[in-house]
Each structure stands twice: as C-alpha cells, then as structure tokens.
Amino acid sequence: RCLSSERYLWCSTPPTVAHPPRLHPASHPNVISNRTMLTARSLFRASMRAPVSALVQAKAPVAAVAPQLRTQFTQTLPSVATNVVYQRQSAHGNRRVLATASTPYLNSIKGEENTLDYRIFFTEGGKTVSPWHDIPLYADDGTLNFICEIPKETSAKMEVATDEEFTPIKQDTKKGKLRHYPYNINWNYGMLPQTWEDPNHENKEAGGAGDNDPVDVVEIGSATCDMGGVYTVKPLGIYAMIDDGELDWKIIALRTDDPLAAEVNTLEDVEKHFPGELQKVLEWFRDYKIPDGKPANKFGLDEKCMPLDYTMEVVEETHGFWKKLMDGTTPPNGLSLK
Image 1 (spheres, rainbow, N blue to C red):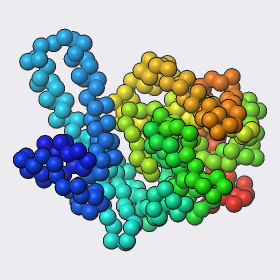
Image 2 (cartoon, rainbow, N blue to C red):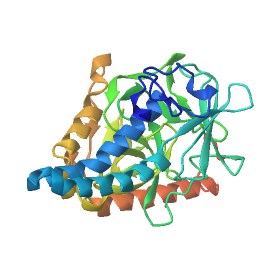
Image 3 (tube, rainbow, N blue to C red):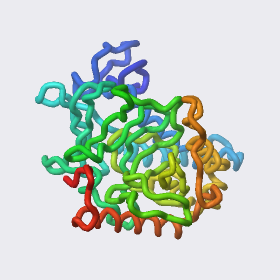
Image 4 (cartoon, rainbow, N blue to C red):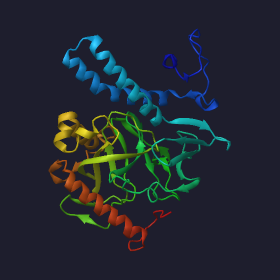
C-alpha cells in the first residue's frame, strides 16, 4: 500500500485515502523523496530479476513457484530498505544531511542546487573529511571504494573540487557558467579516493601525461548511485582516454552489491552479462564533446579496454603518485591536501 503514492511515499496513509497530502520530503520523517523511491525500486527490481527469470525459463506452474518467490521477496526487501537513502532537514538552516546504511560517511550540503555555491561535503563521526584524501582506496575486503559524483542518467558535470579545502563535490564551471554534458551519462560516474594522475609523469605506452585528477570510475551496475555516495566496487578493466592531450584513465567497475557481482569478474564476463556495454562506454566518452563543436576524444592502447591485472597496476601506480603528493615529494601546485 505504501508504494501507491504518486509522488512521495507516505507510509502512514490509510487504505481509504487515494492520494496522500503532497508534503516536502524534508519536512516529515515518514516521507521519502521520489528520487529515493526510484532508487529503492531499481534495487528491488534488480535483485528480483534473476530469480524470476530463472523460474520463468523453467516453465514451472504458478502454484509451485509462488513459495520460492515469496521467500526471495522477504529476503530481498530488508536488504533494499537498508540501502535506501533517507533525507532529513537539519537544525542548521538549509543544511541537509544524507546518510547511507552501508558506509560511515555522511554528506552535508551547503548552498542551493544548480548554483555556483552548491557543495557536498563529507563527514565521519561529526568531523569534516576529504573524499579524496581521507576515504581509503581499499575497503576492508580488498575491493575498491568508489565515490559517485554523477549518478546515471543525469547530465550535470559534478566533480570533487581538488583545489578547495576538504575537496567537496561541486558542479564544474566554464566561463562562470555551470557545465552539463550534452546528454545524460548512462552509468554511475565518479572517482577512486587516494589516487592521482600525475601531470609530471608521462605514460608513453598509453600516450600522455596525467590530467591532475583522481582516477575516474564508470560503474555499470543496474542501480542508480547517489551523488556523494560511497560504494565498494569490483574493478574489471580500464580505458586510456586522451583528453586534450592528457591521460584520463576510465576504470570499468561493478558495485559489489549488484545482483550480478558474483558472476562478473573479467571483461569476458562483462561481455556475457552486459553485451556491448564496453563499446558503449568507449563511444560515449569519445563523442560527448562533438555536439559542442569540439573534436572527439582519443584513446590510447589501441582503444582496448585493458584487463584486470593491467587495471590494478594503474590503480597502484596512481595511488603511489597520490602518496608522493601527500608527503611533499611532489609539489601540490594549487591542489588542496586537506
């Protein structure tokens, strides 16, 4: 019954009320925003897709499969609920706080969305931290931490502000105007903390020097990540994009809680379960500047998506560059180390 609301989920609506009152999601603890509801639906559908598909292919009678579906439903729903992002209004004016159950990090938002002042800061235990410097590269289980800057199917060009204190997420600008991609990006996009593509280091094999930013991640899973969310991912491969002569690595990854995570470990697995996806990523990043009258981006390494072992070599190398940046071996030249 709670799922029947048109815009917001009003969990205490009596069954006789067709349309609950339109309350702002930040004004009541029982109201979840439409965006959050879509995230929950996406997670639930993704979790149920595989078992339902298997039962359909088996052509089992409804009476026989109903108990199995009921069991899968009751196991899936609590998992989805714990990953839903709740919004609440803070006591500090327009400052909102977002939290996920899977990480110890909170996001404090300052400024109005779609303005030059908009920032997403990260806190841990009440203390402001840098998503670039303070969130570890590796999770406890050896997977990688991924910070989502741009959720899938959005176009605002958000990025960690590497030259600002505590490196919050902000929207990129050009000539004083907020930047957008010419069309939505089709995957969750973000960065690996504690990595740095050193502009002083030229990778002759790939064909360029670093672009002075953390390593980028393209997360190809079924669920939409939240801007500022921290997720554990499995790296699968890497592209060497050349953007205006600079090397801009793009890691292909999959969230560890994706329904297909256990089955996808190699590029061959990606082609099996996500057919054509690697080529789509290549073409999207190659061509996205063309609508603005700019030439297409190039790719090194013969435009190949390199396998996991090569990917991890790049991760370790760029982690080493970040360490040298932090210990003073490499001068920051305007980058924030806090």
